[in-house]
Length: 154
Image 1 (cartoon, rainbow, N blue to C red):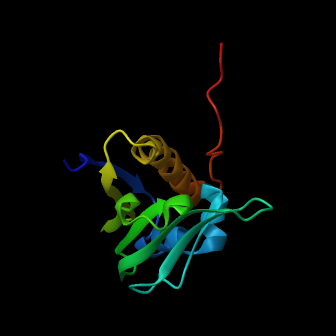
Image 2 (cartoon, one colour):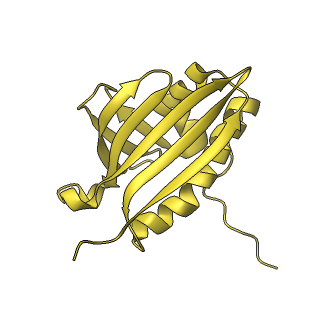
Image 3 (cartoon, rainbow, N blue to C red):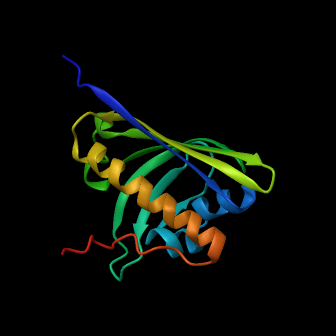
């Protein structure tokens, strides 16, 4: 019996141009400022993509391939934990859609083909809201959020 799949969709509005949003996702020196990781790729269809932690070890945590790229409005890529890079069934798919709305954009991130109940599906549902809130803060104020922050206990 095939594993049940799930998806995650997050929509936010950002006071920035489509080009600035697209560059913040694809330029390593910008992504590191709000994500704590760099997205490293040649950004052409079929090129490898790596999500590299900005720590001293420069750990590659996620890997994938660019499926489709239409700057500054659309980016589609596969996505898997680096430790599962050799397992085709471990890959999910992320789509960034950037639509201009007057002086802002609507950014929709769709993360599909996730195995329901998996660690990746759980991580994605917690991670994307934090990362995309940090992206919004970074583009609107110049300062990203601490995406590694933990809830305060009473």
